[in-house]
Length: 199
Image (tube, rainbow, N blue to C red; front, side, top):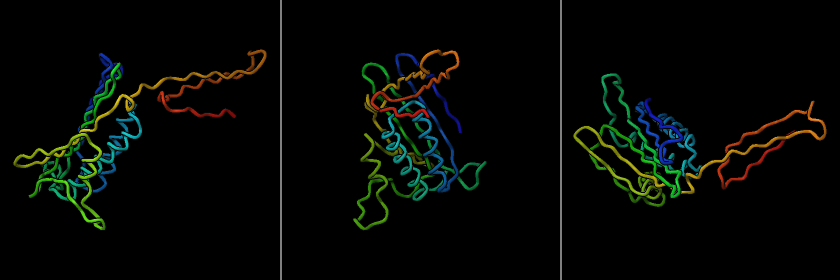
């Protein structure tokens, strides 16, 4: 796994994350890709609803690659693999917002990925429809040996709201000489309530 994170206090309030991962061509890779993506998105404090949307999009893209395409072939991995990458750019400035770009690369197939129209009782065929509904835009790039399906998820200013520190001190009445002082530092999104109890 490789990746690069720019510092949180990046220039002009912009923050970027980019990661590229090569995963085994097995169904367990869907969970692995999803967990790594969620970890990166939570680290830059993207709203939980958009983290869930991005994770669902990536799950569908990886699942489709495993179900409908050939694996990427590498000399180091005779069983094949699938390439997964994401790029995140957020702006914590006055206008706020940003985007998450997700991409999955495989060894290609005989057909072009497209949105299917499954029957109501059909058990499959909804993956790219979900991707199309959740993402702002998506597409496919093909060459002689690989296919890359990508999707971009737009983030509003509310999705990247700045977290604030809450500092709380609890002291006993009277002389503070023997009192326990407890300091709590909580990361809370501006619009989210904070709950706590001291026993």
